[in-house]
Length: 284
Ligand SMILES: [Fe+2]
Ligand SMILES: [Fe+2]
Image 1 (cartoon, rainbow, N blue to C red):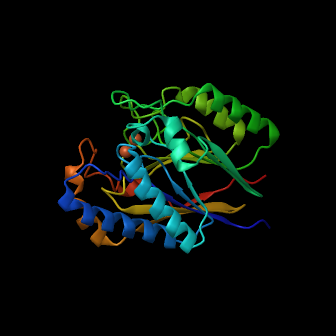
Image 2: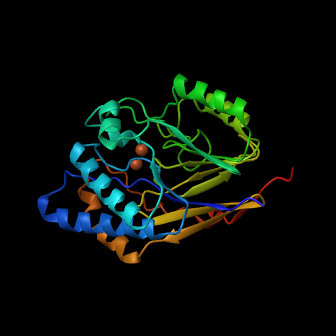
Image 3: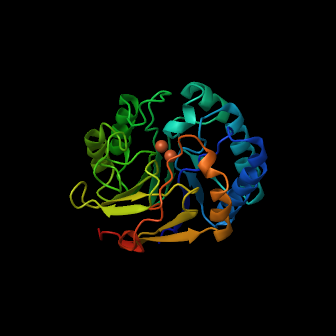
């Protein structure tokens, strides 16, 4: 029997450099503790779903990269992240990728699982925060589906349209969702699509969009400091929520209102019917 692969996943973090100086200390203390709680979770891969920074400013990336690299080294974690629309507002995507020394999109292959990391962002844009998966990545997904067909988890910052909470609103999903769904169908008959962007915990099965797949949206941690863990075995995918120290929420309330353009919502925790536990795998 192949081994279980465990993922720890965090939604939008929105680390923002541009708040009054007197709040910088509490902000940095908040993020250090948040990231520490995240990296102490036992998992094979730790994933951030984009909008890690609020403006994509080089100084914001400096703090995030320094903190995450220290902690992932300390706890010996494999760390992956994807870009969100906020991550490239103050510099080009190319400059951000150079600064972070990261690929724009990537895949991790395990014996019983494939994890795909997509770039769903457009080039730096203040007035269009919708998502797009470009031709280069669509071709790459096609190529991947020809090589091997196995259980797949796809991570993208933006949701697929008309799936999770808010994804039916303008600029709150991937523009070419229909094309992306066709590629996912070819990758695997069953899988998970994980996203952030809409700041609200939400999960829906793909009965009406892509049967066999489940779509899971992660909250923005400034509004609901909750991580999700996924354990993938040949029999099932177990999903659990990890609530970070409640004091973190109180701390974030001290500065998140000062972040210009941060989309706080009281609905960030989602509703009880959106709680996932076990997704049985199809039998061969
Ligand atoms: Fe966001
Ligand atoms: Fe976003």
